Image 1 (cartoon, rainbow, N blue to C red):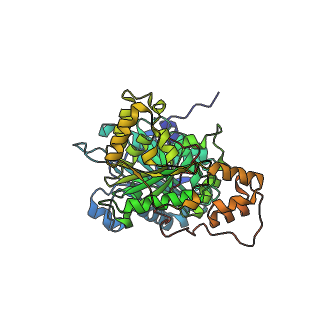
Image 2 (image 1 turned 60 degrees about the vertical axis):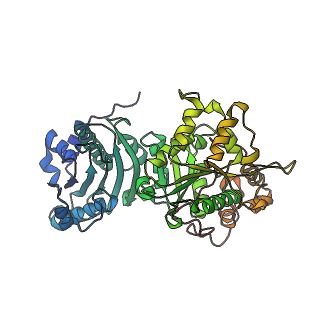
Image 3 (image 1 turned 90 degrees about the vertical axis):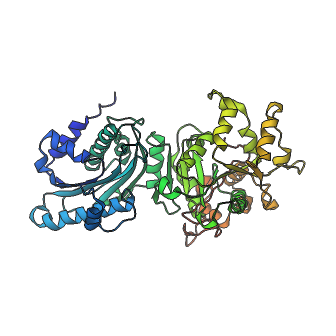
Length: 500
């Protein structure tokens, strides 16, 4: 049987009784909920060098420097930097040989009196795993889901204790550390949609895998990281930005993926109220796609995201199998235009009502949710290689009972055909390319971008026979100015087996 999770009290007491741990707490907003636990359980004098809270913005600026927003990653980092530096400056000489110093900080916006604000916060710890050790750090972003301020404060305090306990006692097992963050809580109360490990204790940690773990464990429904592997907080990247997204398997990224995105982005930038410089493009992979063969294969996952990184794409991992749920998630972060690009085969799947049996309103409810925020679908044609015929928006075969609905959505402009595509790429299907790679058929290189082909050959990805070269392509290299590392790309590799 699995071992019982320690209570919050036991965790706080374990930290207090560890004679090596000594540091400071700095908390802004929602009260000093984390440090209160350590005072409450006893033995705090051996752990807490200082506890403070700078609620007033002017006071906060005087201590940590100017900041545009007070509940943001930069403010948290400023707090951690200053408080940890002060600990070392003041205490290292007198007790550095026996003490592992730490600084815990959070900056939080809990529910206000009128209930009109976003309830979220940044939390982190910078610490020495051992006395005189180099620094390590964990940063995370939380969304508080309780409807009462007092409950949000309580949940925040518990997460903070879990983070401190995990940093001190589970830093050698980051998977267990992540899983322990919601001990004595539930995902109905707290969502953790971003976590980043850095420093000497986590030198072997891949933060992309940690992002995947958040979604896999249900701590969050989505996680995001950039082409260089930097973990991103979705609300900060997507805030007030027009968003274009494409989901796919990306096994591997193909020319048709890139062509689809380029055609969609050109169309999207022409929409009213869309500033081309503000557009954020995302390559989305669903958990269901990653679990296509049962359990998640981490090697397969990293191969996919590496080829996306080689093309300069930002990746969104989500648990939103249904498109209307993905649309709702994106609309939570922006009021600007949202676009989704997909192949015609995926559009056919979208109109299959078997996917909506769990909704009381069936497919009508699904589409009502999908299109309610002026979302648009951009459709890439599907080639029938036997007849040469293209399946497009105007000749898509839809069930008789849904044709009127389909026609309405097309006439309203919710579904648009992409015309600015490269006909040379229409014969590329990702599953065939994958089979060619596995069989050693050299023709596969003609169907993927050159930078992707080089990466696959040099690293032996997707079953490819490794080709040795003197140098590897830089993952910072992009295929086209349209695809920038922080305004990523999106491909849907599954043209033959679309994901809905």
